[in-house]
Image (cartoon, rainbow, N blue to C red; front, side, top):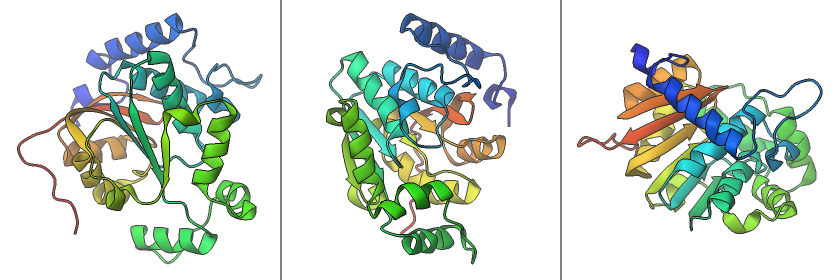
Amino acid sequence: MSSENTPGTQDGSSAVKNLINRSLGMAGYKLSRVNPQGSQTKLVSAQIPGWFSDEEAEALYIAASLVSGNRFLEIGHFLGRSTSAICEAIRDSGFPTEFNSYDLGFANAEEFVAHYKRIHDTTSVEVPAEYDQLVFAQKTTTTELAKRHLARFGLDRFVNLINGDFTLLDRTQYDFVFCDALHDPGEIRLNLPFVVTASSDDCVWAFHDMTETNVAAVLQMSSARLIRVIDTLGIFRFRRTQTPIAVRS
């Protein structure tokens, strides 16, 4: 990986981080990790269950705020924590935006295990405790729970929450894509082609769980350029080339 695209380098990506910090400061936010005394964020995401850190939510908020396009996509809303940050960005920017958010919405642990066994070609899959306790034990879906969480803060009107597989249901091209389904190189090989297909010719990507290995896989498989990794949220600029990635049949 070149130094230009390595997380934490101090060239162009440093200027972007400074822009994010300045913009957050002007909006009354502080880009920092949660301390033991409690959350420092003013975003409502801190009050919604999920794995997204406050720092990642704030970075997602400002990235979505800076996008000039009017079509946003989220792949994997879980209980709405990351969704709320994008909704707040849409609300605060004041730009008319179509925001569609998908989650697979497993009905039970058996469906969850079967899906990830197929994705990762393995015989052993553990259901995360949070998923088991917060979703399956409630006998509901992630989409229904996300709707409830967002409605508490009046944010449900900024998003279309959809229970299903976006690769089968959506053929729109988006100007901003947040994806929480690229956790390892195997998932990246499987799902990134669909993200490329769903992206406009000039699109901002925000991908969760971006390790150095995962960033390298994204850059190898696409014509994207890394802007910055904040915690594990990778922000990329995608510009379409003449040779798109083939999507699996």
